[in-house]
Amino acid sequence: MSGTIPLFLKHCHKLVTLDLGENKLHGRIPTWIGRNLWSLRVLRLRSNVLYGTIPMNIVNLTSLQLLDLSSNNLTGSLPSSLGNFSAMVEIQNNITSVLHIETYYYEESILMTTKGSTIDYTTILSLVTCIDLSNNHLSGEIPKELTKLLGLRFLNLSNNHLTGRIPEKMGDMKILESLDLSVNSLIGEIPSSFSAMHFLERLNLSYNNLSGKIPTSGQLSTFDSWTYVGNKGLCGMPLPDCPVYQTPPDARVKHEDDGKLDKLLEYTSIVVGFVVGFWLFIGTLILKQAIRFAFFRWIDKTSDWVYVQFAVKLAKLKSKWQTMT
Image (cartoon, rainbow, N blue to C red; front, side, top):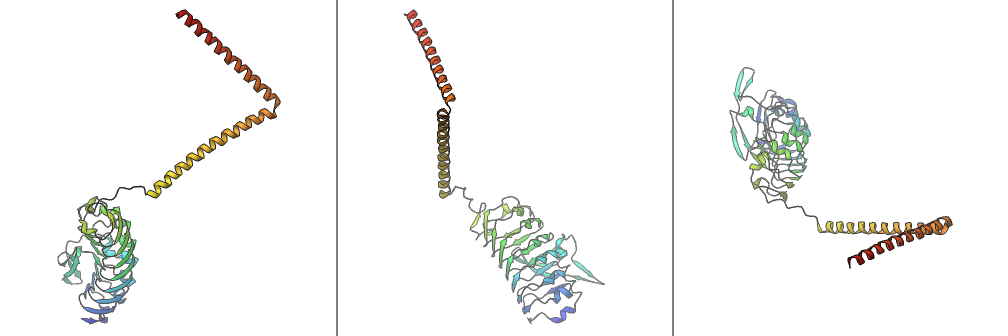
């Protein structure tokens, strides 16, 4: 199929699955999809030649469980409103994939690429929640609102131009089974909250600009080095150990210089204090005659007392020595 997305579909208000993947469709994703097809649970437009931005009103599809727009030429940023998909916010606990629409029953079947392979989901489609926007030209940061999708099981944003940090609360998406953020320009550390994603079976963070120590607890301890390859700043298992922190040479020199300066200031303050105190004392003696006389009288008395004590001690020592000999 080629051309644009058929316009007659805008009148299919009760359409549940729209799968136009693997065609040669071009043009923009029409806004009437989000405005008219409010019953959609599956929207699959992958592997076409669609361009432009993701329509903001696509979040009006409150029943949507599977959004696959991968392998197109989409541009712009990820809408923060992606976090408002009602069917992905809550964990799906349905035990059947049979949909009841008025008096008819349909069994769904859809091909999905998750966990690195293509799978035909038929009997368990009602349990599947997936967003795949990989292989486009999307830019900007990953909106933190995306982490509100606590019922999401598969998220693929790989091969885009995304920047910024991985949202810290992404670890709140505890039932996520597959997360692929590879081949972007993400920076910063891997959030420690990733350790809380106990159902995570596939993780790909390769070829970004991530840095810091890889968290080792939880599921993160089970992934091999291919999960993190292409991030020169990452270290720790399963990559080489992080280097022991050493004070840079210029920092050590600065620290030594600071120590020398402190000692110099200390000695200078002692000398200045002594000189000031000494001359204050001498100045007082010179300017105050009564104090000067009293000071010298004290010196005389002290010297006499010292002399007498010394003479008495010396006499006792002599007497003791004579007795012993």
